[in-house]
Length: 171
Image (cartoon, rainbow, N blue to C red; front, side):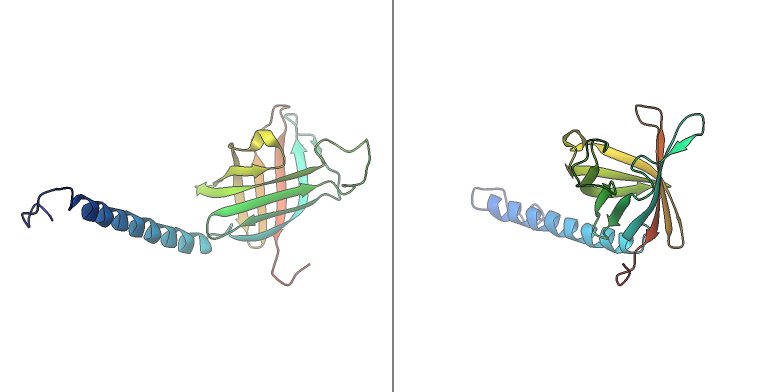
């Protein structure tokens, strides 16, 4: 525009041009964030989910429940792209030497999806080695049921987590 108007770049005009570009970029990022929030608001993952079951599945098909049948857990997917996940052993925080380490797992960050995969981009975690990593899970949503399946871990176990949508007034 400045070229078409015959205005050259000078010390006096450079800040004006930089300000114009900055405002344009800032507005474009704002529009993008609003669009993404509106898209995620309609996403089937968006909301609060209560854990119903967590199973580790070995390569031979045998299953076990890492924290037992009374495990507590929540996963939250916010429309603005943030998420948080929490798993707690039913006997935590009791001082019990027999509890697995860790007996409480918590992390948060941003979430993105691609097809039937959700990626958790972790920026806060109770397990220090998880900060900065991406945990990818395959997901299926069937009404008020969510299933997340993680690829096999270092011990060869895949992890399947079954959730139920938690409504605002539900316990």
